[in-house]
Length: 291
Image 1 (cartoon, helix red, strand yellow):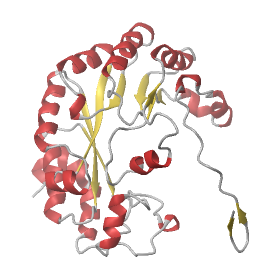
Image 2 (spheres, helix red, strand yellow):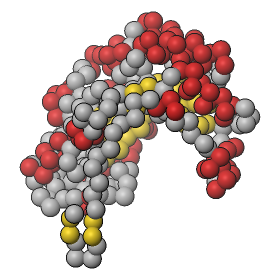
Image 3 (cartoon, rainbow, N blue to C red):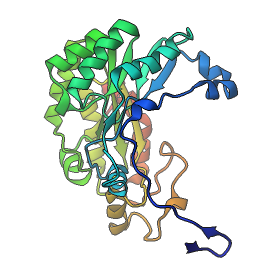
Image 4 (tube, rainbow, N blue to C red):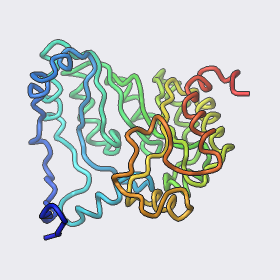
């Protein structure tokens, strides 16, 4: 038992992971009773899997896997037929017109994807979007996604500087991989939505403009961005503390309310990077404005 001046804090042991997540089908009526407008929203979000196989330095995933090590499978999928049933429950309400799959990496299990998309095309038939990575993309996967109704894909570029992405963010994807993948998406007339991050420790102003130019090069249709959000305990936050960008006492109580306004980091160019973050979409949409 951990003692506090005001409270007795009891910390339970870490529980086991449920390997069969097919048993969990959301009862969205609970939300709809409280927020009726949610039911009438034509776009709804679904998650068919849990976990991610990667260990990016800015993400909590590595710490999550360490916490639950030996307590279950870190990556789990709902059975395709059960997941289809979950989506059908919403479709029968009559409001569902577009589906967003919020899985960390929707396409990481090719066998599961083939079975799910076959059922999705037969029983749902509604346009959808999903999150992907270049390592899992080939002509077969793209053709399968397109045929089953996928009209938009989402992926994180994070930064246009390859060294910063692979060595600092531990996201080992080269710029050429993004470019080749984007060419395939354009071939199949699928829209591209990217995630980008500014204010990364050691990031220079030139690196920030590299992020804009890579988005321009791949002809991204939608460009989303944020300022780096330092989550305590992650490798990138520890790097920021060592670099003097964050106070050594930084903790959860210091986390900003939003990563869309200002950065909590202190660097020589952070004010300029905040401005770039706010105009990246316009810059990518109209590259002639970049100078």
